[in-house]
Length: 243
Image (cartoon, rainbow, N blue to C red; front, side, top):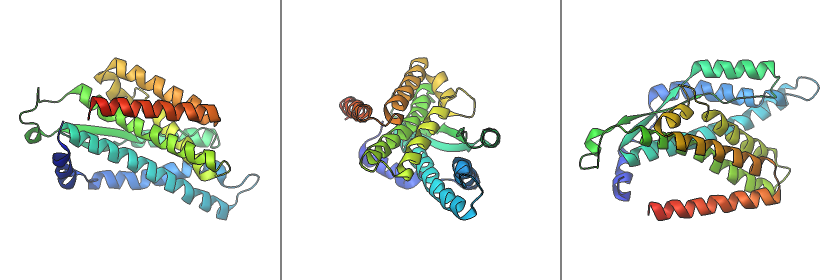
């Protein structure tokens, strides 16, 4: 674990999205936004103007959520002495597209890929047991899922004050679905990294995602209060454990 000043230097020198990441993310974000807005191109008949509007809204939600998630993972990896790179999964995109088309937009999984952490040896000199750690790799994947759930919570709070806002509704749903799909134990998703890194952490992640879904998607006042309370307690515990 590096100090704050060291982390700032690492972010300045190593935090970036490589060309291969960008070349995948641009079409993947467009396709995912299309799938997520597939059911909003007109209620009874095709409306291209309405469809494009909803597609652009979905694109903003998808791009912001995915980039925020990946940025969190990259920064957490640098903090641990790793460099995280996003590996796209075209097969997952195709599978998600097929499911979306078959269900007519009622079921839209998010299967874009996962981050792969590589060890930065020269930044781990003097660290205890320096070397690649599957558990730390699992934590990097875990924090990506937590990032989505935190975004879900933020949008749920905003939705409480603006209950008719479809943007907040879609953003809440998308981030939770992305977190849910990420825990699938498939080789190209974060869930398998967590599973091999720590069985206990993997099962805990499933429980967290399930509880978040129950508390946030029901859109009840009690559920939102409990979600905020649990998040606040978790934040305090983490700050006390890692000041």
